[in-house]
Amino acid sequence: MSRIRSIAYHFPEASLTNTQLAELFPEWSADKIVLKTGIETRYIVAKEETALDLGVRAAEKIFKSEPALRDIVDGLVFCTESPDYTIPPNACLAQSELGLSDHVIAFDYNLGCSGYVYGLSIAHGLIASGQASTILLITAETYSKLLDEDDRGVRTLFGDGATATIVEKSLHNEIGKFAFYTNGEQAHNLIVPHSGAATEKLKKQEKTLIAGHKAYDKLYMNGPAIFQFTLDIVPNLIQRCMDTEELSYEDIDHVVMHQANKFMLDNLRIKCKIPNEKFVIDVKDGGNTVSNTIPIALARALDSGTIKQGDKVLLAGFGVGLSAAAVVVQI
Image 1 (cartoon, rainbow, N blue to C red):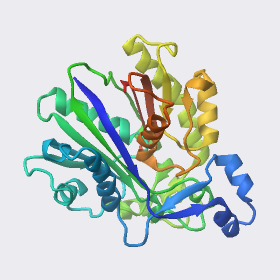
Image 2: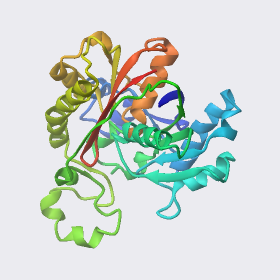
Image 3: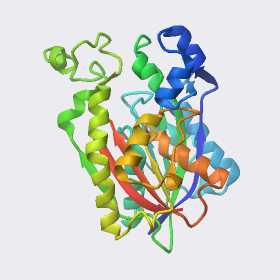
C-alpha cells in the first residue's frame, strides 16, 4: 500500500517567451503561438546546466520543507531522457549530491511523456514488494539541448524542468491499478536518430523513416502522427484504467494528463467526454516539460486549492515510445 506524500518542482532561471520566438520565426506572431499551443513561457537551462542539477534542486525543496525525509528515503528512481552521462546513472550521482543513505536503491529509467505514471508504478511496486518504504521519484529533462533551433514546431512546445515526488508506504492503498500501452512500431515518429549505438544502422533507414529531417542529432517529431496516436489510444486506455477500478468520471474529482499543448488537451477532453470543470490544463507557464508535466500540474493545482487532499485524480501520460500509461490516485 502506498501514497504520494509530497511533490516539488524546479525550473531553470532563463525563459523563452512567445515574443522572443516570434522574433526568430516572424511568420508566427506571439498571439498565434499562444493560440495554437496555450503556452506563453518555457524555461531553458544554461549551457552548463544538466538534468541532474535540476532534479537535485527539486528534491532539495522537499527536504527543506521536511528535513527528516532525507534520512528515511530508501529508494531513488530517476526518470530522464537527457542524462548527464551514458554511464553512470543520474540516480547514483543524485544519491551523493543529496546526501542520502548508501543503502538506498538507486537507478534511472529512460521514458518520456508517460514517465511520471511509470515512475509511480515502479515506486508502488518497490513498496508493495517490501524492498523500500520511502521512494524519491525524480523526473528531469533538458529537452532544449535536443531541439533544432530552426524547428519552429518543437521550439514553441518544449521547455526544461524537474520534479521530485515522495511516494511512501501507507495503511491504505491510495495509488490504484495501472493501465499501460506500448507501440514501438511507431517509435520513429518521436526520436533523436543519432543519439545512441544504433546511429550507423539508422543511417541506412533514416531517409524513409524521417524524410525531410536534417538535424539527425536533434529531436524529430511527426506532429500529426503523435496527435492521431493520442486520440486513438488514450481514451481507450483511460477507460480501461477506470473499468479496472470500477470507476466512472462521476467518481473522479480531477483529470491530469500529460500537458503536451492546449490543442491536444482540448481535443482529448472532448474525445474522452471529460467534464470541463474536472479537467486540468497547465501549459501556460512552462510548456511541455515531458515527464515533468503531470507532477508540475498536480503540485500547482494543490497549491492553488483546485485539487484538495482526499480527491481522486486520474493521471494519464502519453508520447515517446510510443508509450502511454494511466492510473487513479487519491491525493
